[in-house]
Amino acid sequence: MSIKKGVPLYDQADDNGFWGKFGGNYLPEPLLKPADDLHAAFQELRHDKNFLKDLEKLRSEYIGRPTPFFKLENLTKELGGAEIWVKHEAQCHGDSHKLNGAIISCLIAKYRGQTEIIGDTGAGMAGTGLAMAASRLGLKSRVFMGKVDYERQKLNVMRMKTLGCEVVPVTSGSQTLVEAVSETMRYWLANCDTTAICVGSVVGASVFVKLCAFGQHVISREMSSQMMDIFGEIPKATLVAAVGGGSSSFGFFCDFIDHDQISMRGVEAGGPENNDKLHAAPLTNDSPIGILHGAKQYVIQSPDGQIQETSSIAAGLDYPGVSPLHCYLKDEGRVIYTSASDEEAVKGFEILAKTEGIQCSIEPAHAIADICRIAPKMGKDEKIIGLVCGTLSKDAPLLAQRLNIEL
Ligand SMILES: Cc1ncc(COP(=O)(O)O)c(C=O)c1O
Image (cartoon, rainbow, N blue to C red; front, side, top):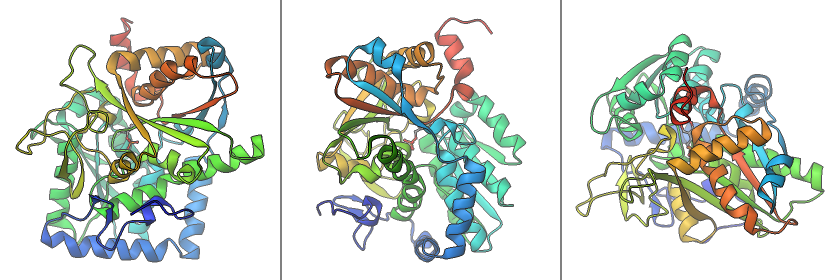
């Protein structure tokens, strides 16, 4: 397979749901039909006039699109190299990009006459997005969240609960995102005849990758027209975004994969600086191919194929696998993948706040950290565009602790 021009990458899977070597549908047999039915409903609804009208209305009225795209004058001066721009996706209602994906699964569920929806969350942003979209569309929601994440992202637990969502702490394994996704799949296996599902990133069996990517594609489609308005063309630029499961970064890259003048960098979670072994960066560290949550992908694993422990200051990046779309883009050499450590991310948060008055969450702070490394080495006539896809809201206690600020 090679990348076709003019067709979004998420629509380029083969008949078995693979992008090259990656993806597929490694699902338990009883989930094959529900997954197929969801795929058929999605393929029909994405061309349905009423569905698209409802989606556009939700995007503009409820999510608050378009999100801003503008130059970071002060950070540009501070770093003294390339011009730095931002796509400020954190200005979506709900403080992150996650509502872009959740709204698709919830709207499909509503059109199919379903009344309940479940989903996974790590940092609590996907869960908050799901709980918000579900409330707005009159669905009952239930979100699975690892107990470790439940404790470290308590403010989002509060948000989900006050949205009327049932938040289920998951106490198995690492008690983080990987277990939350597993538990969501287990629950769906037992309840798929009554309950819809929303996977929080572009991970899992191919239908989930496609649905979430379709929802997040709006980021780059919108930025592409903002670029045309400002520059009169798609300029030469380097896009930089953090990669957890990979939904925000994929949505940010998607429309530009065809444009040779655009370079792209995905920044994974490098974990604590003093420990080479603990990280959540399968692409940067050349992890082997394995199967996780129904898809073939690069995944952090032991020599005998057991999923291994990960570590990151950012709950939203703390995942051993990564989307098949990113695995494919890495193999094609279309995107460069690197990582930033916990400590670099904290510095990234600080510099963006102090120079620009933008307080981002710890996940996109990894992208800012990479921008701080590359911008000074680039010419003043070059452009970097960073994606800020979350606000400080959920991370205030964490950052206060890291920055020795007493609350
Ligand atoms: C603010 C924010 N950014 C990024 C991520 C990473 O997820 P993804 O790579 O799917 O965008 C998360 C995940 O929870 C998040 O909350």
